[in-house]
Each structure stands twice: as C-alpha cells, then as structure tokens.
Length: 189
Image (cartoon, rainbow, N blue to C red; front, side, top):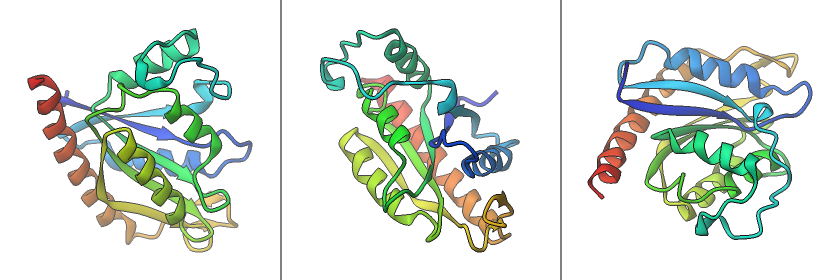
C-alpha cells in the first residue's frame, strides 16, 4: 500500500453525465502506480445542500452532519484530482459547492485537474486554479482536457485519444511529488 492517498473527485451529478467515464478512466490509469493509492469520490454519494453552514469554513466550526462527514472524508487525503465538466465557462455548481464547504481540510495539499467539454473544459480548470490557490492547495501544471468532439463517441461515450496517456503519467508524477512534499510539511508542523 502506498503512503499517499489521492482522491479523484467526480465533479458532476447531472443525469447522463459524461464525467463518470472520465473519472473511471483516471482511476484506471492510476491503478498500479506505486506512489499513491487513488480512490474515486463521487459527489452523488455526498449530497450536500447548497452551502448551509452559518460560520465561514475557515473557522472550522462545522454544524451539519453532512459537513462533518464531508470534512472527515476529505481530511484523509493527501491530494486530489478534480474531474470537472465545463458549464458556462466555469466548473460545475456541485463541485464548487463541495469545495466551499471546507477550508482546513484542503490546506497544504496538492491537486491536479481533469476537464471535459466542447473546448476541453480549460476554462473550468482556470477557475478551479484560482479557488485552489485561495484554499492553499498547490496545483500542478499538467492538466488533462478532453474534447466532446474528439474524445467522446456521439458526445457521450468516453473514448480518449491515445495522446492523453503520456499526459496522464506526467500529471500523476507531478501530483504525487507535490502531495508527498506537502505531506512532509504537514507532518513537520
């Protein structure tokens, strides 16, 4: 068992979503890596209402059981791969909401981004980079962007081009390096 634990967070709960195939592909590509254990976290399994905590997340005073459960889940990971669709030039509302629920559980951890959409979801990643910086999440340079036109059959069945395989390896290498360095930092504090 690897020392690092990475969550692949599926950021879409939409019926008929394309993200499940993308997230499953990410997990399958990460399988067998010795540097980290990768676990799929599907936001369908964490039905968080629209942010309903009275205190800001940075205070760490979570009142709702759903928030406490989510916090416990996220706290156990050293890094994250956010799998996001692009909706209206940004990430999904459900992913942003899940991120906004917490603060300290994200701090001093690493993240990588995988997106999909008509233009590969690059604009969703740019928004997530800004949000991650505010939460003290170190995000790696390598990203994966899948086009609905060239990486999906009939815009719905995930069939990524082979060129993404090497990029995925680079993404995992960068993420594991940063997650390991930040784990050491958290343990030294």
